[in-house]
Image (cartoon, rainbow, N blue to C red; front, side, top):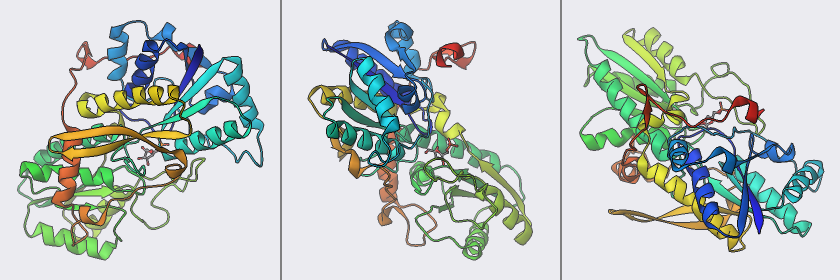
Length: 405
Ligand code: F6P
């Protein structure tokens, strides 16, 4: 018999709790697994020995259903970078103490490319000290920028929200007779996946978004203005999707960075709005979708939620099969009918790396998204959950603040 631990790390999504449910439900089925510990605030909880017995928290099927539809990370999160253990192993010794004291035989880390750095380093360290604790990464990120996997859990729900919201913005923006420009700023760091996914509306016959700018293409304000004028000649209400990760002049963004050296990106929408106002002088508005695009679970994709649970469950089976230092991944077998299989990749091949939009996902003009990309995105946003409501608002599964402290 052994215990297991699970933790959530990095930026929130609508589907991280579904992966937690996957780990939890699968572990309940395994006679080899006894206690299921949840670590508070990612790896920080393991370092500080701050673990919660998940069986005392999730007590019924109703709890499980609620947790599946609750956005963000119920156990809290972190952006914690482990040092190189060859240089300083202090924190690794703390982690080892907690895991041994709690008799943990497998640790599941649900996170993005930074968190997979933790999976990689920890599994290497355990190998080095001959400690038999399996470490498995369960991917997640709305940025969809993890290498090897076809897509990441959490992305489909964010893409569905972005498309649905963009659709509503198109209706709202076109009511007046005067010409207008609406700029929608979308998350995704240095990769344009989420911004590009707004183009799925083309499959519905919408001409908008008329312009889509992703970090994979070079950006020039001069060409942007030319593009906008060109579209204004054709459409009364021009809709632009722009990625937060575009290169902007110094001072537009805050300049603050996190522990992994990532900049806090925000501000390109406002910057472009001001540029359009001063150069063209038409009605112009910028909308930053901000955290809503990663936590609006009322608009989540059931394909995403179901896959996120399945990939968490698969992680448990692979750990029990003796694997470690691996990240679970999706391989798309077919687009129509959409089919994926779950496999594994070495954490070292995913940690700290980014996957960018392929060239054929961007039109030759560099300011829009191709039909090939739309065909890739569409299956990921399919299906809705039957959301449990409470007094007119989606109900969430929460843990008391005092337990998380
Ligand atoms: O990594 C996911 C993400 O949501 C990015 O899209 C965004 O740039 C970043 O996290 C924001 O980070 P934070 O949650 O630390 O503000």
